[in-house]
Length: 227
Picture 1 (cartoon, helix red, strand yellow):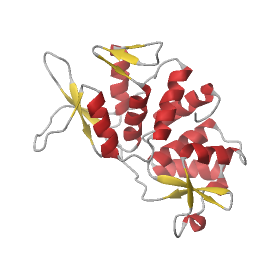
Picture 2 (cartoon, helix red, strand yellow; picture 1 turned 45 degrees about the horizontal axis):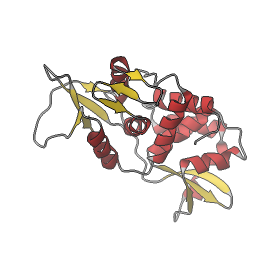
Picture 3 (cartoon, helix red, strand yellow; picture 1 turned 90 degrees about the vertical axis):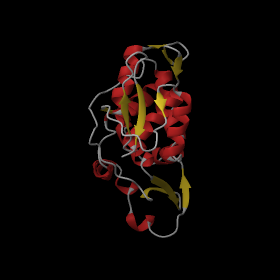
Picture 4 (cartoon, rainbow, N blue to C red; picture 1 turned 120 degrees about the vertical axis):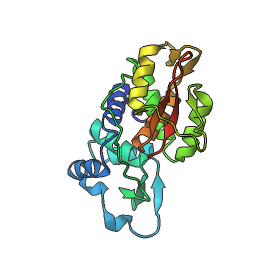
């Protein structure tokens, strides 16, 4: 679990979703004010030192700083884009290691609810933490294999459907389905589970979209579009 307090996890997830289209510099500037020691180019230079995952890094930072939930959300976004925690003589730094800084040309400022249940929100945030080191293609392929309306993109085919942000797609699914007591979004024919939401939100933070493929009779399918 990211934090023990499930309401705090819910706030972190909310900010992760709402700020997912901001550039890296936005997060770095804000973190520089609230946690100035976390960013140090000199300490980050040279060979990679002891690394820590996002949950461990946040746990270590909380020993020294009173982290706000929004600070943690900003860290989650940067980790998702390739920044890494390094531990150097018991100090924790956030270092850029082949990080991406995606653009969001087709992003629409929609804010999906992601259930009213704090357990569900915590499960989604945990899923985001667990997939940080996964490659985009691995995440996308797993989602295509798990969600029927997400399709493989056919080579050489020109698609003309509208672009949707992941947030738009999730909002559509919430309108079509119902959240169950098992912390799943139940749709016609399949369920969307917390790990699926965590994985697809991670792709959004990395600049991925969906393109709609309208089907007259059976509803719409979608393909992933890589920024």
